[in-house]
Each structure stands twice: as C-alpha cells, then as structure tokens.
Length: 223
Image 1 (tube, rainbow, N blue to C red):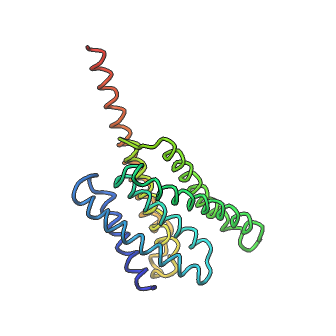
Image 2 (cartoon, rainbow, N blue to C red):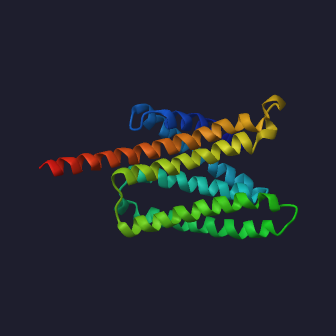
Image 3 (cartoon, rainbow, N blue to C red):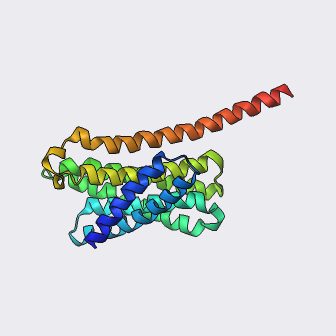
C-alpha cells in the first residue's frame, strides 16, 4: 500500500502541475487532468487508510477532504446537477462531517499544551470543508451550474486538492528529503506556485465573464 501511495502521489503531482499550466480545455489539460484525478483518488484513499491504522488524525482529515474535493471538482465539469444530485448530496454530507470532525479535534488538540501547535491546521481543513459543503447546499438548492461559476467550482476544488498534495509532500515530508533540500523557502515554491496559478485562472475565468457582460451591454445600448 505504501508503494501504491507513493507512485500515485508522484503521478498526481506531475500530472497536476501539467494540468495547472496547460491551456484549459486543451488536450494536454484534459489528459493530464484525468491522470491527476485518478492518481489523487488512489493516493488519498491509501493515505487515509494508512493514517487510520496509525492513527494519524490530521492525515485522515486531509485525505478525506482531498478525496471529496477531487470528486466534486470532476463532477462540476462532467455531469449536470440533476444527473449527479445523489452523489452531490452524499459528498456534501461528507464535507460537513469533515468540518465537524476537524473543529472538534482542533479544539481537543488546542487544549493539549504538547499538541496545541497543530490545532490551526485542523481548523483550516475544517473551514475549507464547511465552506465547500455550504456551496454544495447552495448548488443543490439552485439545481444548476453554468458558465464561469461551473468552471470556477472545478478550478478551485482541483487547485486546492493539488495544493494539499504539494504541501503534504514538500512541507509535510521535508524530513525525508536530503539535508541540503530541507529549506522552507525553497520547498514553499511549489506550494505557492499552485496557489498563485489557481488564483490566476479564477481571475481569468471571471474576468472573461465580466468582459462578455460589458460587450453585451455595449451592443444592447447601441441598438
């Protein structure tokens, strides 16, 4: 299981970075995105199981959250809401469960002086899960997702999943790297790159939407 986890994680990091930089909708983006999604599901599943056997609560939480983000990110561009309502409802409940568990464990950890330093990470994962679950609830209520909002849902969920994977490898496993590479500033570069590129694509998606609205307003005014 460890070997499968490492291989899947390596594929996910490589394919994820290719998909992140590739032009959206192009063949390279689609193919690398598919590899990324499959590899991430394998990596998070095996990681969560191994973490549960230790047990290592933060890794379990991160694994389940990342699995959820990838699944809902893929669904955003693969199927309309009405065709995936059952799956979306199930994933929403998973996200709420992650949020509740994250906050509960976070407060428990914070009360322990020896472990208080790790509490913020639990709160971050819990807050992301809670926000994502609320967006799921809103989507289920609206019954449809189109245009820029649909692309944005896909982008931020896949981007955040890749961010967790990068942070887990480069920062979380820094002790396994050769001593000369254990430099926080150096290891933070891939993590910050994913964050900045995700923000870039989100701004671009909504920027195009705003530009299209302005052109429509100009044409309507001219008529």
